[in-house]
Image (cartoon, rainbow, N blue to C red; front, side):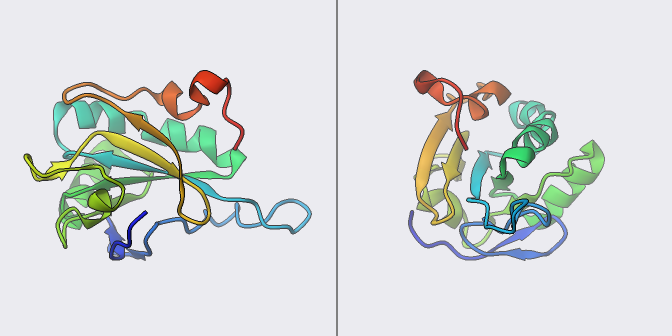
Length: 162
């Protein structure tokens, strides 16, 4: 994974790249040992587009199902932080919405998820480990929605072991 600049979420908070900061209650296991953190980087072409709006309708459910396993979810779009705030507020999205607005698409480019032709991220999800290495990838064709189940399963290998 290539270096990318820090991102800002819909509330103006800075996030490092890759945005793997653990949720407050996931940084330690029950015995005090570190929990290996993995995180889905969920790239969107545009927050208010029909397919992206449909996907954002289930990201909070996905985040809730991943959280007990120590896996995070970060939604990333080339939209500005202000647009992401308006969308999150209008639709009640609680999952972090990170802006890849400037330098335009740098985060998406760093994981080969940027479409130079449209100037937006492709509909790609990348699961990264604590070191920022890609573990899995889910992609959907333009105009097609990703499925929540694709982020929970291990693909052909059966259930994912996070």
